[in-house]
Image 1 (tube, rainbow, N blue to C red):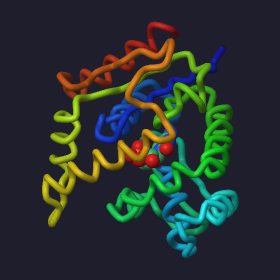
Image 2: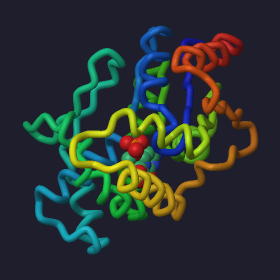
Image 3: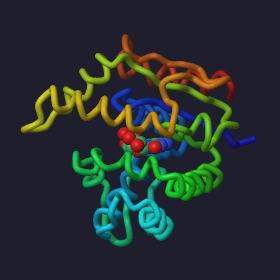
Image 4: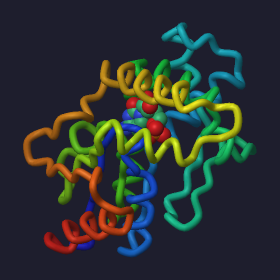
Length: 219
Ligand code: C5P
């Protein structure tokens, strides 16, 4: 059939977003960045003045979240209502709060439902996040855990360092977020049937080639 789901999980800084976007573009597949959905949900809670520690209030906000996310790998646009939040959801203020939404069980169920609908509609899609291979699409034809050593991840993040952000602060942020995220999702070990792709010693292009190779081998 035409249906093909490529599920990719991994920690922050593993390069999964750029690798998956490039692979989807080359394969002519759709692309879903589920982390962007958690980020947009967090942006919305902040904008609505919802106390992030208030689990029920966060769940209600996420249920009514007017989210629109494009699945075109060449043209990533995320809007909440009328607002284009594509750039804003990458701000450190969102990164540091996103785990509060991601650890909210009801909010997760709502976002997981939305992710499954997007995947079903797309047919051929590369979807990436923390729980795609295990929870969102465990029946995906290709299931990959994209890992990289802590050093490689921090090196790549460091290359994206903005002004006023020290390498030490960045390291603390990345490792703290991984620790908080591990409370709800296991993205450090591959589940049964999930292949590990370790990109520590690979270039960006080699990593994309390896992912595409796995897709072509089951096509
Ligand atoms: O991938 P990215 O770093 O943009 O993800 C942002 C956050 O969204 C993660 O730190 C995690 O808290 C949450 N997330 C999640 N499950 C996913 C994708 C992202 O909990 N499938």
